[in-house]
Length: 392
Image 1: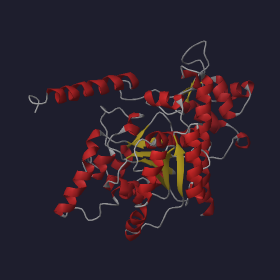
Image 2: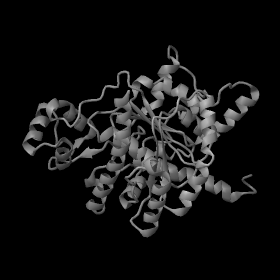
Image 3: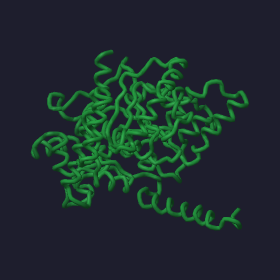
Image 4: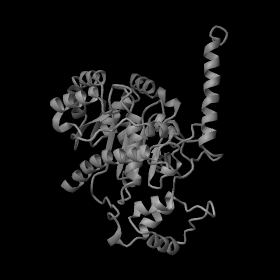
């Protein structure tokens, strides 16, 4: 084929080189990304304390704020979390969350329409829930999209790791004395955020649906819809919230995400075409509900639509009004807005919560507006999650 299609061969080789060069820029020799850092003003804002009080906490925790530069005050996100834990309970913004018998929340971000921001929303939601709330939620992010875009934010593609597809297709071997539960737990990798772990995807996961079809044809697979649920069952006690990024199609892996879900969020772009395409998808969704029910699903705690890529222009305002008219209480009142800062962070393989404002090379006001909007969106979703737990 290389003789007949020389351009394909070049595309293959150059794409591999591009990915290697990109990963070498963002990841170190151990396939790790640098942890986020916080300036003194950012730390004061997070802890809601004065400078002298912060100095007292830093000293009592044995943290050296000049560890990177003798002239610049800077701490890592791990140290920020250490300071949070050290604060008197009366001064904390919220108590540390202990799930106990409350139900693990599993929330896929899904829409068959591509380009609506599923991956950016998934990663932003996961990182925001992990970093911005004093409850210190244990957050998991599962990438079920073979494009592996969400995984690129936290995992070096050339590292040695078990992917979501590897677990689904049993493409692994247990080490001596290792249980399947231990292996699955280890597949949820640490990220630069202390309480966020990711079950990453890899390019090889593009073949998962083919494997499922073949296994069903051979009679080796009785239930193709609970493969992800079975994975989650092995780590249920290790997380409070799991966010799932899905592919923009109704593959077996996508149905698996629905089957594992306790709630669902549908991102919708603020354009006429996105609304039309999503409405077409929703005309089919009742039959999906019938399938889930026939397989024993107990229903979702909440089902919500979220307007994404929102701009303050007449077309977007009209789109918002149309969605309000037809979907009213299912639609979040806060939009996830289009932002140059979000796009820039994405190009850096980061979410808006993975980097410090001081690291953003452009207008700091633009960055802060994006942070405020992302937090407002996440806070709406957090309110729904908290309501589920309180109602239990």
